[in-house]
Length: 184
Image 1: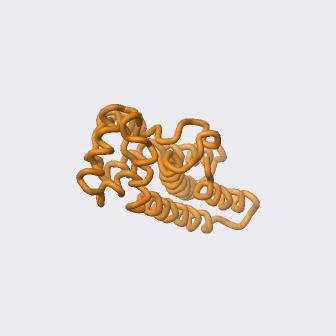
Image 2 (image 1 turned 120 degrees about the vertical axis):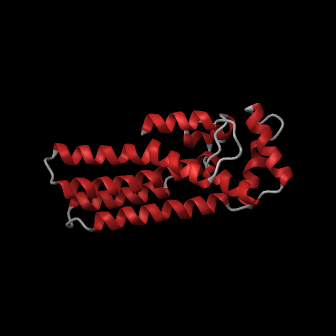
Image 3 (image 1 turned 180 degrees about the vertical axis):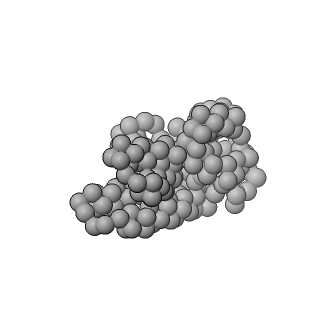
């Protein structure tokens, strides 16, 4: 699934017609399933029963969805010295992520052309990143994605709450907060 997700992403590079469903499919395949399989393998190596493996997989899948959505937000909002890579890198690489998809749903034709220019040139020379960020802000792309991420975080917390209270359960609950509140 991860390899297929990577291939789908390569196929979609440079395209502006990416939908919310397209983005969610990539988040599922590339990140959420990785998180899920890691949690399941941990449960398998601990000789946990099938139900525990399933629940941990579900917890981690939701956590992975939230993690990637926040990562897509941070590509627009983080500072380079905190993020550890240039902001706006996804769009510069030709990737249209969910914050931009939400903005493009409401954008005027001239605003869409600005994004098309960045996608074509793979740079911010003619259209500065600040202009793209303003577009995403104007149409609440970041806020909408944060809300989606929070939904996945809440579901992860709900799944984890089904486990008995322990230091381990508490640590996993704390991880959910780290995912949605991180700034890098």
